Length: 89
Image (tube, rainbow, N blue to C red; front, side, top):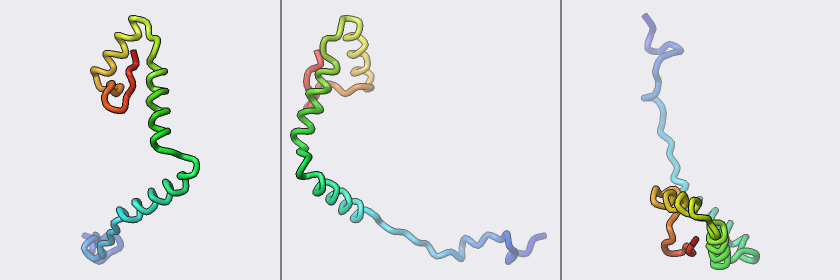
């Protein structure tokens, strides 16, 4: 039989819980990252470029490729042509 105060005893109850909420620190970190990028990064231009690249990527598909693309959109694998997405056809 093992003594409860022995080296393998469960001492979880003796521990003091330590928690920290990093929400405000994460918000500050993200704000600093965006501030550092500001001179070279424009979010509106970046989104516009991303949408143009997306449309170009899926443009000029042949019939079989278009069917595959449509199936992937319907299955939720690829985003549809909702707000912020250019037509891929």
